[in-house]
Image (tube, rainbow, N blue to C red):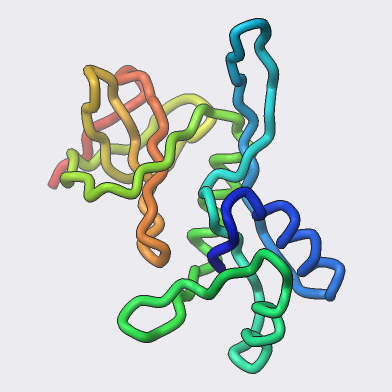
Length: 159
């Protein structure tokens, strides 16, 4: 579901109060102001929350203040598979630094992570600004998560 800007936490809370299952991936980051640094919790995907509901109850969920609409592709509601949610949860639980990218990312070399918190993940690796990033694509919402992974933890998979 899309939410109004900066309303993700409130919409998720309101839906939970109505008995709807919701997942809002939250990451912790350090924000720098001119006079101080502070740890803040923010949604991983700005303007998105994941709602477990049936087609019959979609309208009910949209009645929540701050809810905008459900994500659609070609006139069909986007369905996020449990495996994608599990992947997001695992990345969040590790505490690794994550960036979100909505741009089209060129295909990278196929790799397996052989060490560290995300060991055994298989996917793509790209170079961006002279850094190696492991790409975790969430195709059902057209988003990608980029995780910095040291090259020593990557094993190139044979094609």
